[in-house]
Image (cartoon, rainbow, N blue to C red; front, side, top):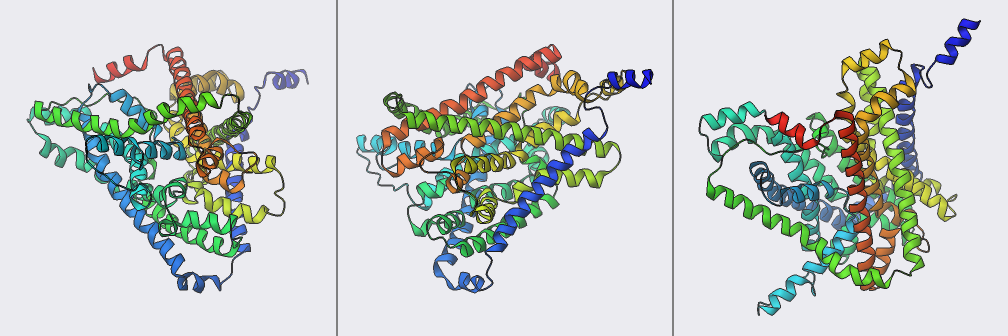
Length: 559
């Protein structure tokens, strides 16, 4: 009895083998249940008669056609811009603005859409900087930002940096010895493209195109603010209008299913090519490639990178310039600060949930793989990626229809927004955590087994110090995505108790441009501050865990 009591007393907390598997499986089941609940909501309002009405309605046919058309054009333009930028970034390791450009490409995924749109309007709008500059030079330029052209510009602004970053990661994975062989053979840009770069990118491009197409097809805030009328309405906006203004739940359900079929088919194709895991930016350090270029090629690359950097930074600069007076004037606005508190509360809880869900799923799938249950591991991880296939507004539409009679107050809506934001960020968090989680040192793990370091002690002493940096990065991505969310909050949020994105949209809609500029700047400060603080915390954690700085590790790697 005494021995058993001693054993129980010395058992580490959460040391039972089940704690490695069941939390992740339960999270995957919760995800499946939420998605199925969304489908049930859609089926609840399903009417077969709505299908012929869909095809007989010229407006709905136009909505579907325009969604496909703008998404195809946006995808093609984004890839065309991203490809030379990625190659130039790979070639020019010592470009002066390279660090800033890389940080901007990292943040493009989480930059609040409605904030960036405000910056684009300030630069390219009718009274923007570009028109003002051309007018001063007596060069009339009556370009209207609103409509298809504005949507394409915004989509390229968001997706070209993301595509360039992903392509750059693919180029960085080409082994260094192949670059050395190419340099010894004296290959110039053309043969290097054919033998090294194109084979590396070819496998990536179909999945990347599908990924960007899905982002553009499900774009909501961009089309709401820059669409300019019914001719530029997409499926997402039509769903929102059907729910919030026309109360036509059947039409919203049909459109949501149409959107789900298109996005699901594309993701199925991307998954079959096994490229989906390469489609999200990771948190690795990039150091450039060991190659030599001519002076002319270097100048061309640096000019291209400078133009691209200006394209990205001008709207952010415009937000800062226009936002400072607006933010100063709004410092005593109770509505602004209460919106900030709501946004922070939703973002922090959603990010915490998303990181916890991600860790649980990875622990379960890794445990199943160690036990040679690969199919079970794949199913658990697939549960974490369900929200990549099901767009936020589609999921929100189903839940909105299902829970509509019970949704009565602000806190319920915010709780639902928090949960959906956490689920939407989960695929990105999984991508950030997967690599570091699966590359833990096997020797250290075996040593921990020998010393009976299991459960909570194992996580705190062994896993947490090594994973602190990716955990903080995953938290930052999830919080950033939640801070900028506009589609879900537009559906479930209360106009009287808005978050920052909803407040910004209300200010833009009522032409309070100075106040909107202040709100946009506050969101930008919040996002950059969040990433800066968490990035520094992650760097310090890495130095404490490994005893070296990231720069020193890069130097050793390329030595």
